[in-house]
Length: 375
Image (cartoon, rainbow, N blue to C red; front, top):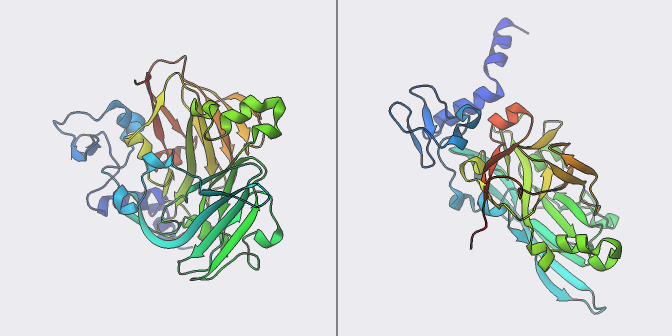
């Protein structure tokens, strides 16, 4: 390799490309604290010279945060709402008395904004990345009506138990543009699962946005020894209503298609939960359904500041697989449930992020805003 080629590779780094792209995108940039650089005040960029300092939480990590706001209305989804937006489909009763839950999913090509001024040509489920957070109950019969309105063959592969013909792979549920396929199977096992496209090349179809959470709540009647715990996970029960539940999908975006990510996030938009922290009521427990779908990087992680949590690997148990930890790691498609509380904490802003510093600086970091109960 020539000296010029070596120099070029060193200069055109992933971070350099992101900074350059942000600087060129309508004035957006990574904020800094040096005199004359931009800071984010919550409403846009202003000159640091003589201006009021940014809110303390935006100055964390040296104000390494994108400036400006993503147009959520144009995107068609808002990360602040996605954390609690569960898609439960439509419910009817089968002749044998069992519950039939039907979901309708459409593959759509759509350009989305992943950081202020940074657009990405995504392939989506129902026009959003990640796709809708599907939620059902253990033992129900599920019917997934999938229509491909995109420009490439696509499918839906569900992490769960089903027949081979429902696997969503080439020859078994992969469909072309303009076609429709219906996946049918029973909801099992309970847990925090994932669905994604299984068309080839896999890394491109997944990375471009075709993935989402697939949560199956436990049926308390099937788990009498831990029925109270099962009821606390079953959406719609009084026990579940006591919990603050959030859907979080860790993802990344290769904006120049060199098989390396330039932007990282939870629920797609870089620094979304730094600019608009997730509200937590102090005396109510918290449950996070967490999945990692970052392509091109071998591992991701979740670290909770000033607190510890119990972790349920894959969410398929009603007792923790890890107790009292503040950091877990996940490879791609790994997922689990985190449970914790702030009841013994003072109110305030508490950070969460991966423990890969590059991911944090390039968009994957956020804050919980812990508050007293509001009447």
